[in-house]
Amino acid sequence: MIPKVAKPPHVPDALVFEFNIFGDERFSEDVHASYAQAVADAPDIFWTPYNGGHWMVRRYDDIVKVVGEPEVFSSSEMQVPRVDTAPRLIPLNYDPPESGAYRMALMPFFSPRAIRAMETRIREMAVGIVEGVVNRGTCDFLDEVAAEFPVGVFMELMGMDRSRLHQCREMADAFFKSRLPEDYAVAGAAIMAELSSLVAQKRAEPDNGLVSHLLQVRVAGALLTEDEILRCAFLLFLGGMDTVTNTTGFTFAHLAGDPVLQARLAADPDVIPKFVEEGLRCFGVSSTPRLVMQDAERFGVQFKKGEMVVCVLPISGRDDRVNAEPMVFDIDRDKQPHLTFSSGPHLCIGHILARTEMRILTEEWVKRIPSFRQAPGTHRNFRTGTVIALQNLPLQWDVTQEKAA
Image (cartoon, rainbow, N blue to C red):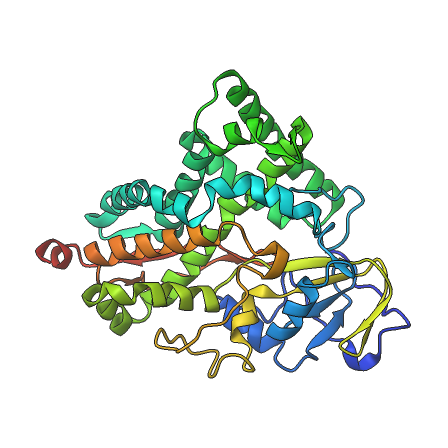
């Protein structure tokens, strides 16, 4: 465990609140609710002595302002604690205007038109995965469905070998668990070796996938260098292996305990998009750290150059200033504001794909398994940090009932 650090002189005592994003004792199986409750009495922006000492921003409006001011709060480093050899992933670790050109290079694969063109294949994959478990009456939803489906979609998009799915997820998990420089180095090297092999393969045998696209796309009139391709692929790898899987897992963990909502979704699939959006509001997984680039006063707080600021996106939708009764899962809300995909120049480029995957999987699941529950006597394991993860979700359902339906 990394020891706590002393409070810097410029941080007032009133803004100190002890909270460990990597394993605070107040976290419970209901990770997001316990997270929101744990910091409910903290200042809106507070400093914690854990993990090298850093600021945390928990309110929706404050997060929007932080991520919208990259000249003060840069995305050039996003590791907490800071590490000497922080990776510069493309386009995430570039601020505007540099990030914009790289984002445009990726858009042909993530535009609304591109995602619509993928829907038939996405649905085929969802049907195959749900059909693979439906007659068993039980599964680990996280491992067998929530990972297999969106990660499988991502791997096809990239042109990767789907037989490597579990090994690649283990690599991403090791990276997100890292806290020490040596841990990041080992985890990062394993991912980079995987991606280097993939890029070499696509140079020899190009296809219609995203990696082959990166080999031929031009940014500012020039082809991407090998280093740029790898740093872009590294970011896509981390996002594709972990985030949609975990948001889907947490959302279905909630659904497993709400038989009334299950019946409603099965009877009226038209409300599933609202269900997905409420899941995104309640169960985001990725926080977004920022590096302070210059001494500045914002929100009445003195920020010093070199400090880290963690914007807690996963509980942004539980801010009672933007959502009434924020701890209640309610698909009938008039509005569902959240920052699960961040905002501004670093709005997640994959947000349309993520929503589409969650919608289609829910449609195909409740069509075949309209009633299910978490297996009695089981517990959900989870990982916390800058990216929250659900690590298992054992579900059960009545096979006879579903066959009859």
